Image 1 (spheres, rainbow, N blue to C red):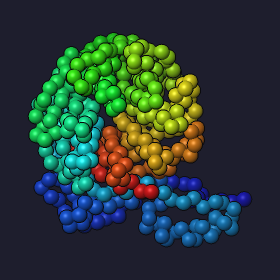
Image 2: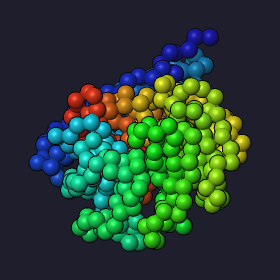
Image 3: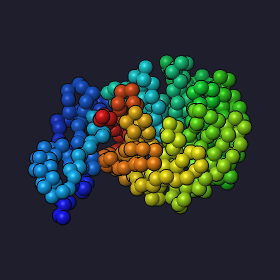
Image 4: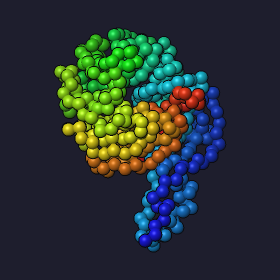
Length: 388
């Protein structure tokens, strides 16, 4: 039986033009003074305009021809962008202060910490004095901002009220990725590796009560990327990119207990952990891939094409979604139907270089940093509304 090709084909998103104005702070908006700005209709299926024209006839024809109609989904709607003129190179990670309405972004190659208004996206402040800022954490109870600085090899602790430095932890050469154990107030920082350069790396535990090192573990890998912490137990999962494997570390003993291969030569980098379903969500580069690994035994239970050149991943537990931004200019949004069952929900347009992100579930916002990198394109920050 014939079936309409349109039922399963993905159409590139169309952009609906709006009135725009440019403010001095770089925020572009099609609505005078409102935070909703520069609307785009994006997704893997038809734009909303096209849907209005074809949805009715398509549904009728698909029923007649025995082809199930495929509902279009637009999980992210772009609200606006903040232009960041004068930036070059790459951005790295985000952090958020929801109570104080602040968004933080590491200007890795610009050597700054950027501060934005969380609701409007307006750029508020640029804090200099960094070497190469990477991971950022905001501690609400003490109003402190933690920033790993790989070039200087320190963890900087800033006062939230005026961004002055309160203290620092030194001896962290190549400090990069990090994860915070909020219950124990311990920060785990990846150091060492090829950028120092060393043929090995470390994960260093820092006690945030005292800002002193608690311990470290040496890892025989010169390229360690994303890591994730188990809340219900002592395990830490670490992506060993050059080994194409995941190391399992007992963070109480600071000892590696297992090492699980990812089953390909792709470069495993960002990682998130769905602890409810005991699944590690791993993004790889070359080629862009989403891997889902059982956290009990290291078995790969799903493998799907994903955005290329991604530096981040966000897991939306409430909606059962996984967001993977890519330097190729697309955000891949996956739907988790079950612990071992996933599907591509949408490919949402972003921009070349848009490869780090932050999901803020409390306000249903998703932020993406557009790094100029080698393209010399304009640096930007995109803000999206997360749709139900």
